[in-house]
Image (cartoon, rainbow, N blue to C red; front, top):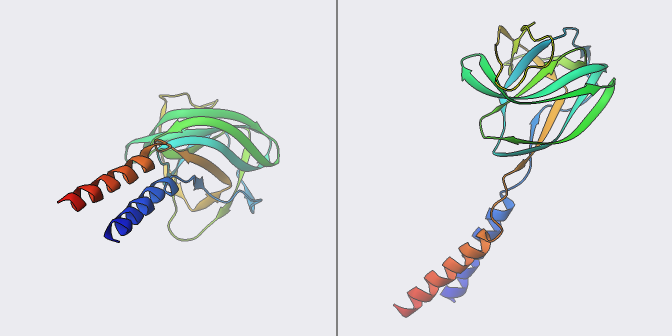
Length: 192
């Protein structure tokens, strides 16, 4: 009976390891919001929107105006200073836009957005905000990997951008290994 209970616990633990690897969403709801951003050629960071270890599989924006924008993956190198770790430029049409991609990200990296001539919808919000932006940061086109910018202020805004991250998969045999080690421990206890 004791062996069955221990094996059951090992199986539950192994099953929990598999279930723990679920996709994560970073950003906000992608909806038609009240305000269309009018600034062009600037980058900003969503400092509370950090990634997990994994791969960005798709991203979406709701645009109030057509043109170029870019998804940025940022490293924070100093307070309010960000370095571009990855960039993907897209041309958006007015309305909902969805893009499939494959960009590796690491835990702690930050979601960023470059707004060229494309315009992303946002709502003004009250209370704490999570965006530090580099207004008119000197990039006439999307920044490249390794470029950096400093935030010049924070905004109480929710932008219509959302990113899906698929986590780094657990090794396929890990749950079976955990189960086997549990069974081995039970067998050793029974002999003792």
